[in-house]
Amino acid sequence: EAATIDHVSVGEQQPETEHEFKGERTETGINEGRRWRHGSWFQYTLDTQGESAVDIEVTYWGGDRGRRFDVLVNSKRIASEELQGSKPGEFFAKRYSIPESVLKAASNGRVTIKFVATRWLAGGVYDVRLLRPEK
Image (cartoon, rainbow, N blue to C red; front, top):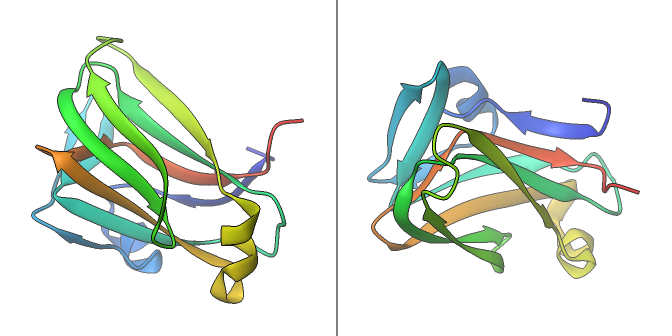
């Protein structure tokens, strides 16, 4: 938790509003007691709080399959994901580094993290957080 800079409680109205949620054809629900969101595309804006090096950590459900999507930060693709159901019955977190050039160009230290489906749906996403990089 000490490494967390900013965090979105996915699928919860107030935290999503605070993080400027936008999306198209999205749905939210609960699985194993945790809220998720998926859709054609959806995004959140988070605050880096002036940190010069930042990672994103996204939590997925290991049983989701057939979903292919891109992860963008301020319109720059930083990853392409394909969920293949490779960890059934468990959540897993994936960490992505935000390129320094994207952070330097970020207006007021804010980054918009966007999930865009390239096949079927983007997500389900259970948690999105900005973290200080691991040392």
